[in-house]
Image (tube, rainbow, N blue to C red; front, side, top):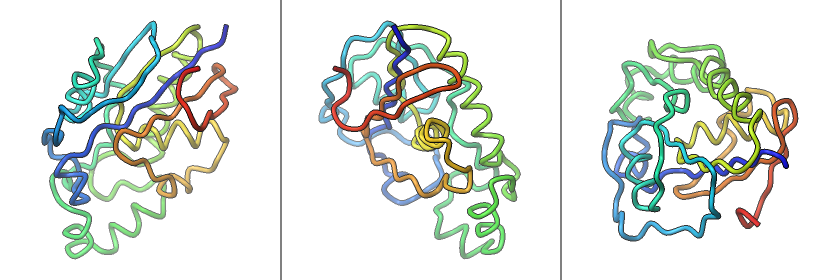
Length: 183
């Protein structure tokens, strides 16, 4: 039996709606959050408010996984992309084009991706199904890793709220499964 990991992006929040670097706000309409998820042997969650609330709305009994924390945006946290672009246009361009850059004083995409892949590699040594409610950037990092895509493609993967992404396989070899989750 192989390892299956189902990644669920959090429900919509005011921050996501305004393209604001996460500022710890709550999800909108938790009663409307519904996905038909298969039974999983393990359920984990990013530590953010929006991921924990999404997991609760889905009825998941989860443990918090610090390795799945969102990308640390440093001093940009709580600011919108538009605000950062107006105040620090060169820094924003550098961050969006150079995976090794962290002009905000937080974490680079490269550092972030390495952290997420380390978690994925450990998870890949297990069998069974894991459901993980995670930040959209965690999904991006996992998708790029599964496809062997370059880290420069990180910002080219759009992850809408409540998107479910499944990968199967194990450490060293992952397959991306599109369409219906579970099965």
